[in-house]
Image (cartoon, rainbow, N blue to C red; front, side, top):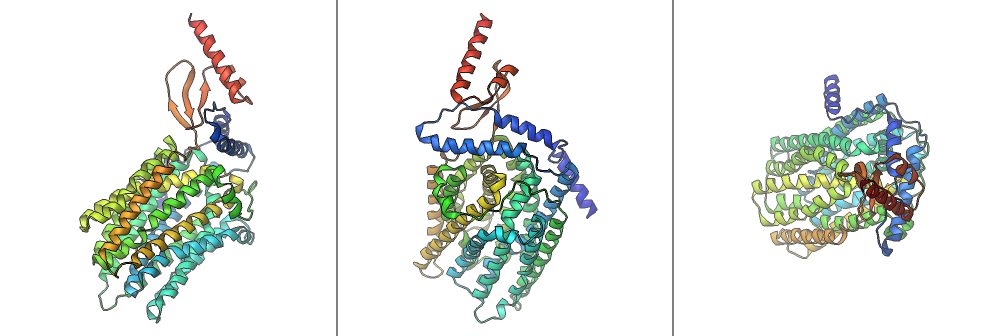
Length: 535
C-alpha cells in the first residue's frame, strides 16, 4: 500500500494537481477574476437569465472571501490521495457488478420489462429518498461519518443477492436489494459532493477529477475483465457460482473503499445549510437559473439515452447470443477508452469550460446507438464501444463540472438532490418507454432492438440541436490576445460579453462597482486617450 501511495503522489505532483502552496492566495486570485465586470451584449429576452447569473457570480465571490477554516495544504493532498484510492476500489466493485446485473437477470430468466425496471427503478426510488438527506445528515456528527456509514451499508447489500437463484420468483428479490444498494449510494452523493468540493479548489477540479476518473476507469476496467474471466471459468453445471463470487468480491472492495473514506479530512461545514429540497420551487424557477435550464436539457437527453441503453446487454446476450467473454470484451472496451482519455478531458474542461466539452461530446454521442444498429460483428462493436467510452467520458465529466459551477456552496447539497431527482425521473421514464416499445414486438425480435437504437440516436441528436445554444458557460475562460489594451488575456463568457484585464492599473481599479454602461464609457475614453498618445 505504501508503494501505491508513493506512485500516486509522484504522478499527482508530475501533473501539478496537488502542488498548490497557498490556498488563500488562490481564493484571492479567483475573487479578483470574478469581480472584474462584464460588458453585457445580451438582448431583452435574456435579462432574467443574466440577472440570475449575476446573482450566482456574486454569491460565489462572497463564498470565496468567507473565512471557512480551509484545510491545510498537507491535509488537502492527503485527502485527495485517499479520495483516489476510495474511488478506485469502489470502481472495482462497480466493474464486477455494473455490467453484469442485466446478465444476472437474463440468467435468472426475468423479462425485458424487469430488466428495464432493474436499470431505472432503484435509482428513481433512491433519488426520491435522497430528498430526506438533510434529516439523515443531522443524525451524524460530520459529513465523513455520514458517508462512511452508508458506504458500509451499500457494500453489505451485495450479499443477499447470493440467495436469489434459490427463490421461486427471483425478480422482485433482485429488484429489492439493488434498490437498497442504490438508496444507500444516493444518500451518500449530495453529502459527498459537498465534502469533496470543499477539499478540491474550483480551478483544479477538472484536472483532479480527470486524474481521479482515469484511475477509477482503469480499476473499473480491471473489475470488468476479472468478472468476465470468473464467469467464463465456472462450468455450466454451476451457472450461478460465478455471480456469487462477483457479489462477495463487490462487497469486499466497497468495504475497502469505505475504509479510505474514513481516512479523509473533513473540512469545516461553516456556511453550509441542509435545507429541505423543494422540487416544486426548483421547477418553478428552472427557466431562469443556469442549473434549472441545464436540468431540463439533461432530463430530455437522458430520456433519449435510456430508451436504448439498458437493453444493449439484453440484445447481446439474448439476440446475438454472445458468450460472457465476448460480452465482457465489448463492455471493457468502453472502460479502457474512458480512463485513457479522462485526464485529457479534465484538462480541456479547465481550459475551455464545461459547456464547450459538453457540446462537443454531446453531438458525438448520438452516433453510438446508430452504429449499434448497423453491425452485429463483435469486433465492430468493440470499436464502437471504444468510441463510446471516449465521448461519454467527456460528457459525464463536463456534466459534473457544470453542476458544481452552477451550484452555490451553501446550497449545493439541496440543489444537487433536486437536480438528481429530476434526472432520475427522466431515466425511469426513458427506460419504461424503451421497454414499452419492445413489448409491441415479438419476444426476442431483433428488429425491435434495432428500432429503439435508431430512435434513441435520432432523439439524442434533436435534443442537442435544440438545447446546445441555451447552455451557458459559467466559468471564466482565458483567451490569449495581442494588443496594448490588454495586459495578457481577455476572459470571455459566451452571451455575456467580455471580462477583461486592462493594461493600466488605474483603469482596473476604477471599474469596481461600475455598471456596464459606465465600463463601456471608461473603455471608450481609454481607447481615445491611447489614440491621442499615438498621434
